[in-house]
Length: 466
Image 1: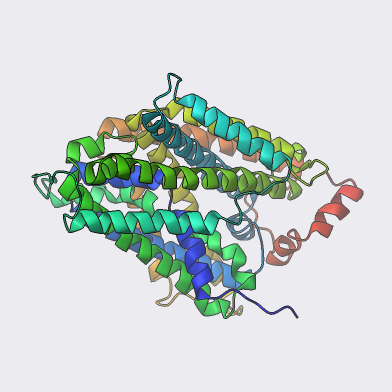
Image 2: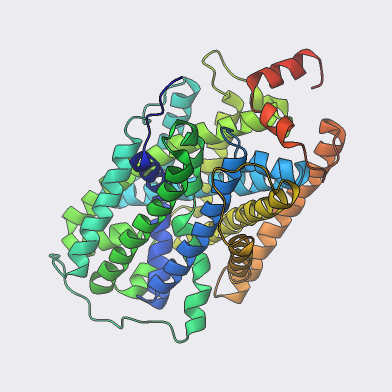
């Protein structure tokens, strides 16, 4: 038997590396700019709610270990194909494409502000996206070996620059401004929806659990520690913002990390932040294109998406998915290009989709506890159903108060609602007439786990089932 080589540190670094992104810095800047340093309270609340999700996903992973589809397979075993397709296409594929497009837009803004060439900023995005798309089509995962290094550089830079700002050690001018911009506790509570984006994605460390020593303890603990490390880093950054960046400028910036770097250390800080953030964005885009294309391939093999997504080229790359995802990312980057308001809006829309998938995870735990109360679990959430229920209620509250502006809130709900309705219609007809399965009937866990085997897909293709 092959020895498991990954320890707690690997889980922590994976969680931190997957959560940290430049779009998080936009949410951090806009949240702090709107209500001041009390945004730290909203961050703590959002982190605690995300910890409940980590707990639920850890229990699901303990019950159905070593599967690659994660939430898709958990939900399929609990609620059936229709909610599975909605949560995966909306909560993972669409949400990640949207957020990656926003990341690319921030990258373009940063590059155009540092390199004063007479070209539209979207050109930087186009060049980067074409480069990454071609690399993936040729099966070259050129950034896989440096992604951990990039995460360390980004987190380390944030901590160092945050500490410089927090202790007023920068070369820039210290700003005199109120520490608190909120006029009531309700404003702080409502900002948890903005803070939510700062902590999503830690669950992507679950697929490595099969290679982790003492996974029962190290996987949940590693993901939780990852979120707490990120929380501490972002608290330090908010304190730095307070001393060197006017709240209004921070709130309206499309790249707050660039604004803060320049205010703190002048042109040196600006170039430093641009370099590290550019590496992080390119790495994130590469992971997004590669990972989402393979998720689409896996869902096609489960007959949840058209078979065209399962087609691969001679290098084993699901090329249709790579091309469509790259084009979609570029579209969202074009829509949000250089606009802090549009970037914030798209992040909040993406948050709604991701929150829904997290609610599904909590519901999955409650369903499987009822259906299989005595099944062995290497990890089980304490206090019975209390923590999953807190997660459901808290996340639902954040969806309800997704924005302090009622008009923007209604638009976000409308965009998310129309998208979910469209996905629901697609899922209904696809499940009914293509998969030929009841739309709400759960699939036995044994069959769901069998679907993860490539031989299952090969056999069903051979026998003409699809």
